[in-house]
Length: 126
Image 1 (cartoon, rainbow, N blue to C red):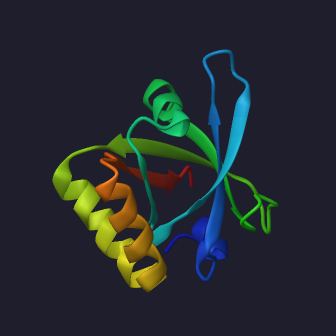
Image 2 (tube, rainbow, N blue to C red):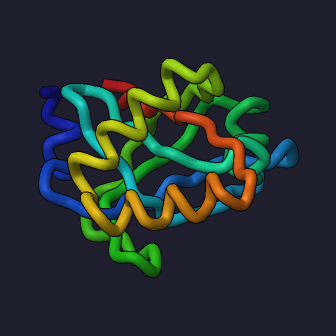
Image 3 (cartoon, rainbow, N blue to C red):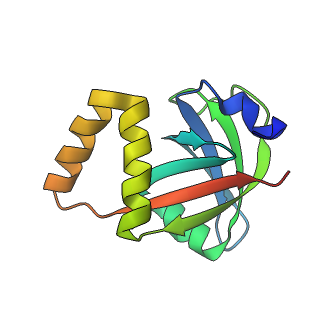
C-alpha cells in the first residue's frame, strides 16, 4: 500500500471533493472500502458526484468524520466510475465485509426502492 493511502486504513468515512464544470469543488463524506491501493465507493448511479467524476476524473480525498470534517491530509487522486454489474458487485462485497449488517439493510432497502448503483474507484496521484 502506498504511503498516501495509509491514513485511510482504519477509517469509516472519507470526504471526496469532486469538481463542477466551472471548477468549483463539492465535498461529500461517504463510506468507502479499501482494497490495496484502491478506495471503492458504492453510490447511486445518478448522484451528483458520479456526474461530476464522469466530467472530471481529478478529485481530492481525506479521511473524515460522518459530517465531513477532515481527519487527515487532503490527497490529490483520480476517480473512475464503473456501472457494470461485475464492478458494482465487487464493491458491494467489500462493503458487506467492512460495514456488515448496517450496509446489508441499507442496500437491500435501496435496491427494493429500485435504486441503481455505480462503483467509484479512487487511486492516489502518488
